Length: 277
Image 1 (spheres, rainbow, N blue to C red):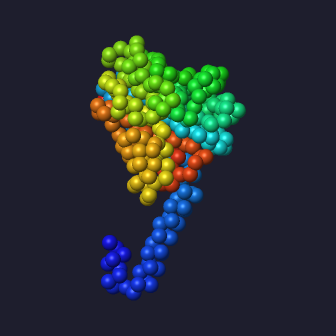
Image 2: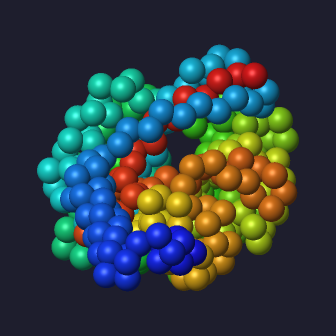
Image 3: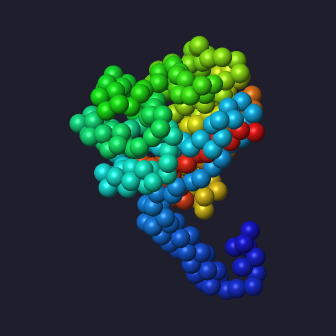
């Protein structure tokens, strides 16, 4: 449409040059973003209010790190150092750790050095083999959740499910043993689980998997998401706040991975503060 309008007021050769210039500018902008901001970890502060959260936990701080995907060692050290300055109560790991087993234990050890009040918990992702991952986590004091849950504080239940692409996530099983009036936070690598299983009584879901669309056109459109390659629900769970099929808030992080190209999808560490409503 723009090209047709230009044809009416500009010579043909000029139109071609203008079109090529626009295309070149678009490519340069995306390349510049990929080589600069998309290599810098962003610490995203978010908050969540719930009447189910015990009043004594008002201001409770959670760090959420997901989709590590062979993030370089330097990046992991920097993240650990930053989190140790944030007065974190709980560190949650959202799966897709490392593709090479020989690096798994060492990189988990770096993350395990994050100082928290109530420990470090994690779930598997679609690139993980739980038979290797869970023992490696336990060896450094990180607690794996596999269709299971635990009270991290009185009336604060943390649940985690298996990966949707690898195994059989079961939200109902992960809630076994929880009191009806408890605050429930669900950790699920793939947010699509929230669309196909009952999320009743869950207060908040944290997920990753979609990498913020990974490669986006000006941050607005992702081929991988819109073609249903990464998620069955298009851009619904690209990044940030969304909802499950029955209205439960879902927050999706871009993750921190550095082995794959990112365009307008900055790596993120989520810093979540909970408030009693």
